[in-house]
Length: 292
Image 1 (cartoon, rainbow, N blue to C red):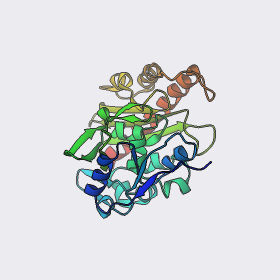
Image 2: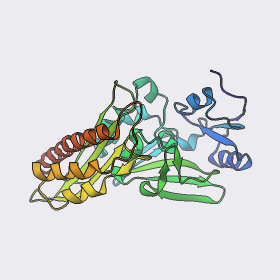
Image 3: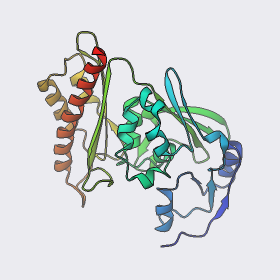
């Protein structure tokens, strides 16, 4: 397949990119292109203008600070995956990224691009939800910050306005006494997951869970927080019975209809199993960090 005809511009600044976006309602941004090029080739997307943001210097680079990781919009997924500074600040990111497609895709794909694409089965939107990250956005009216909980509206749909663009993704550093885990199930290595679970749990000095953040991909029309499961874990010592109850609560968050890949019932089974395994690993890592 070949893409449709479109105009092409390469702005040198964020302001130029925003102006081009505002001037042409039927425009798309090109960052890594790993999702966009496929939709162009299959004529799912048919834009009048393609805005290539790869030359914008202000959109490159990673900053790891005392409280958060700032990943600018043109940072490739592989760069984040291999960064020791990022891994030291929040090891969940590497664990999630190692499950994203294949290395050749991560070499080109960007963190911000995947999040803006908002595929309900993609891993990075679920990671953003679990970490309670935010995105920095710029449009003709200026800049704003969108929390992960307000960003994803439907499959391939976000709360970004048509003339806005993500300039950076900000992920909090892993809190003290907090464990992490991400597990998914796919038919083949590198395929979109039929279900994936991301878990962060924080323990107090007595080993009780003071905060649990669980999210999932592949089970609904967007990545989702598993709030009912989180409530089961809060205040507990994360024993097996409590984790099993949380996993049963997580099953009810599956709303994806039967499709050619899996039935709703099968996805609920996956969510139950993956939640139990993911929370157990996160708990054990939290205990190890607390003892260190």
